[in-house]
Image (cartoon, rainbow, N blue to C red; front, side, top):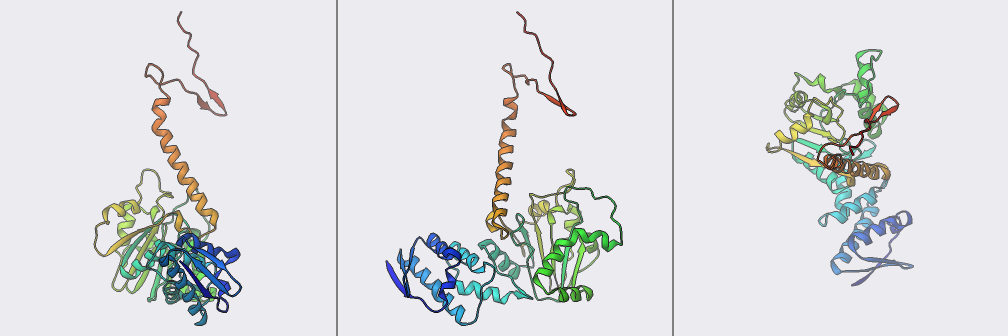
Length: 344
């Protein structure tokens, strides 16, 4: 099927840099888009051509209503559309407008992110589990208070004694939460909200003994909570409050003897009514495009190492089934097993 549609004013902005947005439509819908002097020709299956035509119509209506797309949001929305046949460009754009908060609009950039925001609106407690950069912590909600908590755990380092007041000591651990706030709100507004305790940022240890009413509570880096800390946190929820627990189970910095509270919660709470779990993967990463590739490379390496370890006992066995001699490093040299003379 071929369908020709006229190009309206400013529709060229839909095309994207080097027509990247058109390529998303072509690949996702398996259609061909041919640009004419004053029209666009669509060719493909009737249903797919109809979806593409609806995208152009929605974009035109959004432009006429004064809607503007920022920071690659349009490309991200188109990718969501390709993954979800029920979604529309207008619906995604208006949903993002409703979630506008300060100088940022919380716009889902993948199907999982869209599901994440929808479940947060539906459930009072949501666990978001996935790799870094998938947007787990980038949230907003109209409530009386926003409380951001984080475990104060060093990421593979031992920083030793930190000078200053208690706040000075814990601030380095909470800095990512401050960064997200200053990115979403004007700095003056953030400082004012922090001063008035409308926004509270604290280590998870400060949550003990409290009941959090009329609040939106976020626990970040939950993979670094202990079992006791996680149980304490999920039982703090008060009336008219929501809690979101986010974490990356591939980056646990707890001592090896301690089990992650997030892993335990995923087992213990999976069948509890009223809360839900949303899982992300590298396809949901919204940082620099290299981050997706880096995460995939680490996952591949982890799988490769696991496979090699499974084969290790066989490779280290001699012909008689006994372990073969190995080289043992000592300092900067290598301690080799003694030579064994063969008996004639």
